[in-house]
Each structure stands twice: as C-alpha cells, then as structure tokens.
Image (cartoon, rainbow, N blue to C red):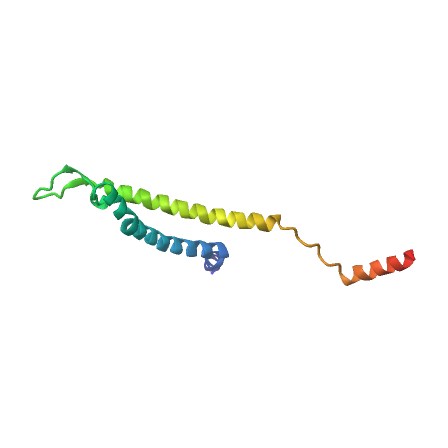
Length: 132
C-alpha cells in the first residue's frame, strides 16, 4: 500500500502535472509549426528557387528492384525539419524572453512597506504623547 501512496503523491505533485501539460501542448504546437512550415513557408521558398518541392528532394542510392525498395536519402525532409526547428526555437526564445522581462519588471517594482499593525500605531501614539 505504501508504494501506491508514494506513486499517487508523486503523480499529483504540481511539477509532474505541469510537465505533462507542457508536453501535450508542446506536441500540439509542434504539429502547428510543422504544418505552418510545410504548407505556408516552404512553398514560396520553393517558388523562389525555381519551383522546387523541398519535401520531395532526395538522392537515390539504389534503384528499386523486384525484391527491394529503392534506397534514398530524403534531404528535402531534413531541410524542412531544420526550418521547423528554427521556427520553434525562435518562438520559444521570444516567449522565454517575454516571461523573463515580466519577471524583471516585477522584481524591480518597489514594494510598499507593510502597514503598521494596530499595536505599532498605538505604541507610536503613546510615544508621541510622552514626548509632548
């Protein structure tokens, strides 16, 4: 029973749940970026370099035979993956930069001193009366 309780405690901790949510959102974000790159960014780049479809660029090392498929190096897909990574890295950098600047502004903001307690106010009044 003790091991099950430990597992429950571990799984319910905030860090594990936050990490799980981050992984799920990251996976969905990766799909969005991949679609953006393959469907929006790469076609105009292909047109600019002469109508090339990057996802189909490949070097054939061995032609297909009756018993074996063709052996190819699909470097176009690699180029597309590198562009995906670059866009994801840039977006993550901008998000982290925005978060860090927000944290810095919060840290730099002067905090107002805490209001004195009722006892302190009373003692201050007594001190002022004694001075008179």
